[in-house]
Length: 413
Image 1 (cartoon, rainbow, N blue to C red):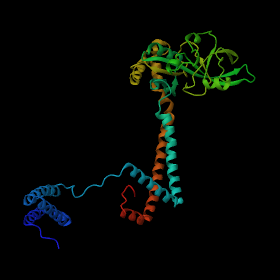
Image 2 (image 1 turned 90 degrees about the vertical axis):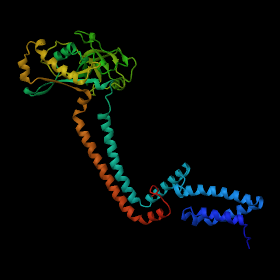
Image 3 (image 1 turned 60 degrees about the vertical axis):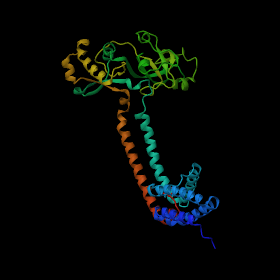
Image 4 (image 1 turned 45 degrees about the vertical axis):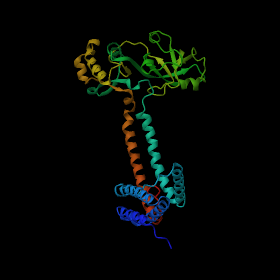
């Protein structure tokens, strides 16, 4: 039978028991008995070593510790409920891989459901990706020219005589070269079909007449040989040509001695003076060679020439458009046979648009509509797959309930 503690120990334990009443009731029920037993053992040991002084010294220290515990349990709301420590990275990765494996096995157990879901989403996503790739390449990416957004196309209009788009004439190109200081360069282009002779079998090829400003406007120089110059455009100058890269490779095997070689175009000997680089892209693909634009008498009335220009540094598109329209009043001064009344009877007008807008104008609306359509198809596919998941979820209610009861969180489920 356990011996009765000394009087000093009993008094100290009584004070300690009173102090325990300050603790929350739930804490007292769980821990008070063990704390009193431990306190009695400590006080007995101190009494045997140091007598009553040791007992009361231990009691004071115990009451001080008890006061701190009371403060913590009463006022620190996080003391009784501690958040579990987050799992380590290795554990999270292991749990994730395990859940992925379980999900994969669950899908393989229902190949029909899995196949329909994958096929539905695959068709929707594949359609969107394919169309967006096309839209990105045509509408979103810049033109393959340095500062391509500063290249503009000039067009004239005479709607009152049923000519909504005239292009340019040699006279108007000459006017802009002389007076339009808001353009750094003005380029004249014209397609031509020529017959390549001097071979075993004559062949019709497509060429492009271009004034020497093409190299500045499009920002590219020949990779081999030299560019055109004003001398090549003069009347009576020897005929010369610059090959495009693909024509040089496919027709002449990339012959490094191609510069200086003579071709016959419509029976006219034409010297090859250069080859454009591989990354050079024309506004309209198809030509295999560039030919210099010959000097002609600048007249107002012969239209049909494509006119491109590069905006001068610091000039915006709107500024160029305003100043270009102002130049039209000077047409009668340059061409006396054209009066202001004549221009008004034509409904004369001029416009400039960026080259990119001009190239994609006919297909931009169609491409955006197609992209929106396939995007809607993807939404329908996602809705169908969501319905499949809802049906599947009904079959898995018991499984999910068991997993939740075993402690699985939302992310795991």
